[in-house]
Image 1 (cartoon, helix red, strand yellow):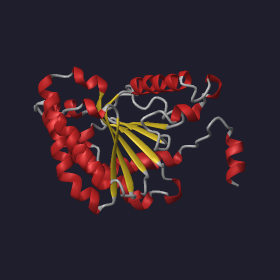
Image 2: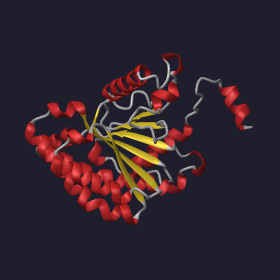
Image 3: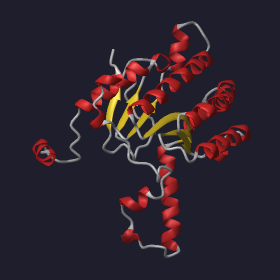
Length: 250
């Protein structure tokens, strides 16, 4: 078991993103319906948010509901939306107490009105918090995000806000949902699957990836700290050689 005392304080990823996978399989293993897995998955969210704040992570992005998740059974979607509302109501006091800021990325206004209302209330009441930004990807798809950015950029080119030649990475970054966030340093996916699933495709360009067979409802603080320890062993070169990195650090 990895304890927080074993984490190197000087090498904490600034932005961690997690694909929380395995709720359905976890429930199936126990002979329960999928919603049982989702309900228990919330407990892991609470645990990991607490762990991230404890070690000083700046931003934690959780893949909460993708644009593709609308294809799931209507009953499951309805449960997920109700679970989101009840969780937000329950966690607001904890967010305020622990100085956690909530924000979202994705097409939020297409969610049910009760969800939008609760989200906006929690976002407003935590907007000045500074310890940790908890970023929920809701009705989110990376390809849709990029298409949306290029539509806005194209309109600005037509309106002579800037020329095609001026378009660079910074301009694209400034038109993504994550404009206020740093790039992802570390991407974690639970349940043994090894794919990105249309999640933060632009933002994970230089992220370190970590895949674990642990299903999300079983993923707790010790698993998170173990992942962070693995991250701290990695050498992030950003296109440079190991020798260049060593000389820079020296």
